Each structure stands twice: as structure tokens, then as C-alpha cells.
Amino acid sequence: MRITKIERKTKETEIIGSLKLEGSGKATIATDIGFFDHMLTALAKQGLFDIELIAKGDLYVDQHHTVEDVGIVLGQMFKEAIGDKRRINRYGFFLLPMDEALAQAAIDLDGRCKLVFDASFSAEKVGEFQTQLVQEFFEAFVRECRCTLQLKLLEGKNDHHKIEALFKAVGRALRMACEKDPREKEIPSTKGVI
Image (cartoon, rainbow, N blue to C red; front, side, top):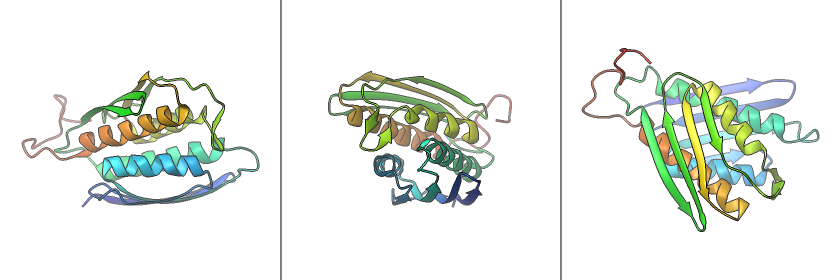
């Protein structure tokens, strides 16, 4: 069973998180940013990951530190839970429709840190969540998970739908990449290491 727990405390945020890769999609998320909690819950549900994440941040400044640090912690948890990457699929991809929105996510658990983000939003906020922080979250996640993630919004008008489609697509792509391949006996790389 691939399970991990991480605590991170800085002058800006305090975060406690746990992750179970072979979960059922159960999420307990509390960041004090309602829409962000909703997106992380959607990611967990679509990935069938059990995630507990409690974050207290300096929201009186703005949401940036909290969102970025949650991305850091979530990325670290995935990296640690995945381990040496022996027998995993390594790659995952998903094309997800959310009403009029259509999002594409492709991930490679390759040990590198690269985000390609091709999405834009028309509003500054959805609920109280600052839309520019979507990219910031995924940049922090990719850096700490040490993966390549390509995200592309192919269609969409409603920012809520567009952002939710991105998070759900990432959940599904991550699920595929993390899953064990019964035919794979080694690390899925011609180099023998990732």
C-alpha cells in the first residue's frame, strides 16, 4: 500500500497532508478557500486517491502562499508515495468534458520538472479563488512531484467549468500514471532509472 504523510510549516503557511494512492477517492480538504477545496476534492475523486489536507495560511495577505504551498505538499506526497517507480505505468493522459469545457491532461512521472500550461480565464476570481493561481498550483505540484505535465484547455466559456475540467483531467491522468502495470517488472525506462 503506497501511503505517505507530510507536514510543512513556514512563516506563511502550516500544512498537514496525507495521501493513499490506492484509495477510493475520499477527500478531507480544508484550505479556507472554498473553490480550491472543491477542485482538490474533484482531483482526489477522479484519481481515486484518498487525500487529507489541512492548510492554514496568511490569507489576510492573499491566497498565493496557501495555494502554492498546497501544490508543494501535494507534489511531495505523490513523489514519496510513488517511490522508485518500479512497475508503474509512468504515463497517463485524459481528455475530460465538463459541460461546454474540454480539458486535456498528459503526465509523465519522469523525474523532471516541466509544466506546459495552455489555458486562460476571463474572470479574476471564481468564488473567492483567484484564477491566476491555477497555473501557480500546478507549477508547484510539478516541481515537487518531479514530473512533466501538459495541460491544455481545448474549449470552454465558464471559468468554473474550465478550471474543474483541468483538475479532474489531472486526477484521471495521475491515476493512470501511478497505477501498477502487471506486465511491467522493472522501472519503465530504457535507462533503467527515472
